[in-house]
Image (cartoon, rainbow, N blue to C red; front, side):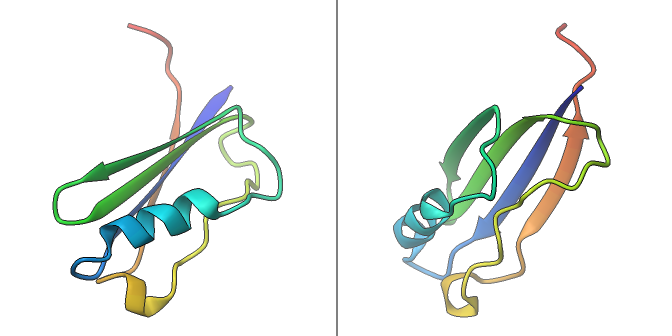
Length: 85
């Protein structure tokens, strides 16, 4: 089964590049099948990781950044693949 973990944070004003660099520098305890980083308006950063794992398997996740780097707590979601359309 393919599981995708989604990590999304909003940087403090003007710190979007710093938050993106911080997120990309985070090393997970094991490597996912795929990892991709995104940015969006309002200094938002999104990281998706794909895993060959059961939905409820304990998987490494990107931690919370330092509080001064973000405007709110990180949002996290977990999805399982339902196949290609």
